Each structure stands twice: as C-alpha cells, then as structure tokens.
Amino acid sequence: MKKTIIFAIIGLVLLIGVLGGVKGLQINRMIAQGKQYVPPPETVTTAVVQSSTWPNELTAVGSLEAVQGVMVAAELSGKVVKIAFEPGRAVKAGELLIQQDTTSEAAQLRAAEASMQLARLNLERARELLPENVITQSNFDNVEAEFKQAAAQADTIRAIIAKKTIRAPFAGRLGLRLVNLGQTLNEGEPIVSLQSMDPIFVNFQLPQQELTKLQRGLSVTLTSDALPGKTIEGAITAVNPQVDRTTRNIRVQATVANTKEQLRPGMFVNVAVVLPEDRMVLTIPSTAVLYAPYSDSVFIVEDPPDDTDASSKSVARQQFLRLGDTRGDYIAVLSGLKEGQTVVSTGAFKLRNGQSVVVDNTLSPEFDLAPHPEEG
Image 1 (spheres, rainbow, N blue to C red):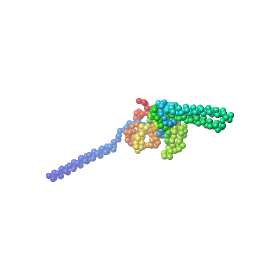
Image 2: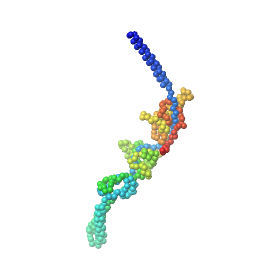
Image 3: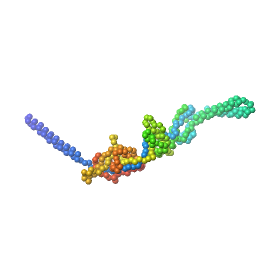
Image 4: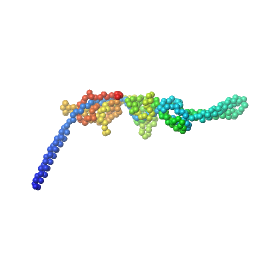
C-alpha cells in the first residue's frame, strides 16, 4: 500500500514537471515571437520644417479701462424730484441726470437777488455823490462792500442749486440706475456709473528687459474671448517711467478705437505689441506636436538604415523639442529641429519610436497662418 502511494506521488511530480516544461517552452516561444514582431506600417501625413518670417511681438494680458470713468454721486443732501436719464443710454456732456428739490434754495435766491439789486442801486447813487463830496470815501466803501456781499450771497445759492441739478460731467454711456424718485440722497451717495467708451485704454505689463523696445506709437493688437475671430488694433500712448519693485514689470498703456462699443471697461484682453523688426522662426503645423507634461515632442520621418533592404519603409523617430508662440495653424520651434526635416503632421498619436510609416499626403489638411473657420 505504501509503495503504491509513493509511485503515485512520483508520477504526479513527473507529470507536473512535464507540463511545466511544455508551458515554459510555449512562453519562451511567445517571448521570442514578441521580440521579432514588427508592427505594420502606419499611414501618416507629413510636413517639412520651414523657415518663416513672423512679426516680432511682445505678448501680455491686459485690462480695459475707460479714458474717463466715474460714479456720479450726490454732492449735497436732498430729495430726488426728477430722474431725467434712462439706464444704459449714451449721454452728452452737461445733459441733466438728476434734479434734487431746490424749492427752498429758489426762494432764498429771489430774496438774495432782491438784496443785491437794492445794493446795486445804492452803489450807483453813492458813485454819483462821491465826486461832489456829499458822502465820504468811507461811506462809499461800505456801500460797495454791501453790494459785493449781496452778490456773493446770491452766487452761493446759485451754486447750491447747480450742485443739486446733477448733470453728466462728460459724454459717455450710463450704467444701472441706483436711485429712485422721491428718495432722499445723502452727500456722496452714488447715482449712476458713467463711462466714456470710445476710445478706450488697455493697461498691461511687460518684463523690465523689454523696456528698451517700447516707445509711444508702437502698434498693438487685441483679441478677446468675447470677440472670437476679431482683432482690434491700437497704439501705445504711455509707458510708465517707474518699474514695479515687486514684479519688476513695467506698466504700459495703449489706446484703441471702440466705435461699436464692443469693448467694455473691466474686460481682460490678450495684447500683442508689434515691434518694428520681423524675426525668422522655424515653423511646423501645430497638429504635429505631442504635448506632454515632461516635454513636447514630434515624430521625424527618416529613411531606413543602410543595412536594410530597399523595400523597407520610412521610420518615425521621436524628437523632443522646445516650442514658441503660435500663429494660426503653425507653431514656432525654438530648439530640437532643423530646417528641411520632415515631421509627421497628422497621425503622430498612434506611433511609437522606430515604427515604420507610409506617407500619404493626399489626406493632409491645409494649414494657414491666418485661418478663417467657416461659420456653421
């Protein structure tokens, strides 16, 4: 009985060994086949690295600001008896906005004007009597001072009435109404925002090392997410003489036309300062770039090695590079490529380093420095 058990165990061990050996051979064969496996060539489109002349620009993010902007507020306390504007409407300089109650001041003005009229008559009589020595010089001076005091009192009341008659200080567009009819306004209480819309300022900052390139009159271009596909032109009108001690940036102000009032104070825009001299850059289609956190790369299409047969396909070699700014469908290459090299323009995402490729540029899309997408 014991011998039978021993033989059974030995047989089981031998069976396991045979099965393990067979499985090991199969695994080794699969590994060898994997090493020898060559993926089929992928069909791609290509583009040649070209040298192009691009405008030399300094880019920044700017903020729009009205050339003149103010929150119209009450100068004196008083009850609102008339609202003469509509929110959001354009107004001219001097146009009436709010009328506060001036009935008390109007009555005081009539009394002051009557006193001033009497003082004027007394002054005229005294001026006629003075040469005849009917009155003394001292009396004449007193009469003249009384007239001036009466005139000043009337002017003071007129000034109060003018301050309670609130008008637009300049031409612009009004904001939302913040007061109601019959409301008693306190001194300094806001009434409505008034912003001049055309032209408009754009403020932005550039690093201090760019200071020597900046001067008044340089052209700037503005783009905004609020105006997709549109570019607005302007010019630098002021460069701050002082550099910010914290950021070491210099503040620049440009002025742009805004006849259609599409730009509003407070909006942010992308600003590009166009420098006088153009620059030479290497360009490739932006679709050729594989973006990654560690480094961006492209695939260069190269001829097969010399030791292969003539029927071998071209191969794709991954190349890491450093990129610059973008113009339309193209992107500038700062380092990593040379002029005349061929890169995969579409289909790079499905490649791996050293893979063979088949070039079919009949499928290549058209690339443009200033594309105009069709509106759907």
